[in-house]
Image (tube, rainbow, N blue to C red; front, side, top):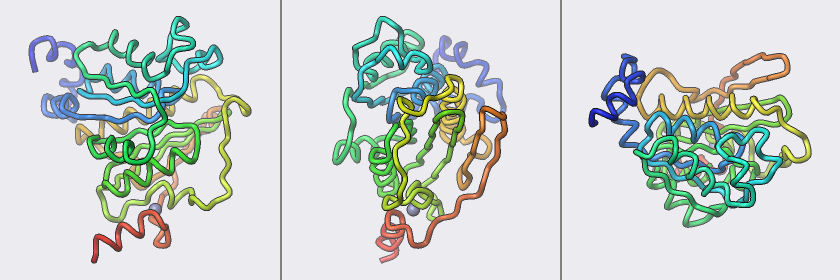
Length: 255
Ligand SMILES: [Zn+2]
């Protein structure tokens, strides 16, 4: 770290749980963000400000006026431009010392696999189950930690699936791909602006702790937030031995 970095990140370095070593781990890390919307906005802002050295942000959508109520990485002048590009511009202005890759597409298939393979941690802030399950499958296959967030109306959820651990549950253990779950879109249901900020910020906190090796993450727990009553609770998550996504991987590893 040079003098500028020592000063910029001094309030992290002062924390014994992070220190110079933890901050260096952040600078050396690569975080993959799926979605630059309500959750990806605060998550990306904190990962960039905190000095995660490489960020890759994927989003195929364009910034719309209705996004600005909560998607705080975007500015009014960015309306009509791609969200990943818009996020990169804001994040670069905040911290020009980090590398930011913007992918103006909804990544899937081999490209998603290749991106997950290069990441130290994956943050899912996408708005649909097809993407969530595709990201989960890639993280299971490549044994990467997945930090999943969701927010609609006044209800938020965060879970950490530390898929480096053999007994970790995966997203599909919790929400089976064959389940009846339907996409609940903010465009139809509405969403409380700061709820997305709270959930995305918790995702960033978990990512930073996980990279720096500080404290205990939400791994193995699901955090549920009711922002209307401002009640938070966590429930234990267990690996589903019948889960078709992570069971297959465990079996192939045993063979
Ligand atoms: Zn599973």
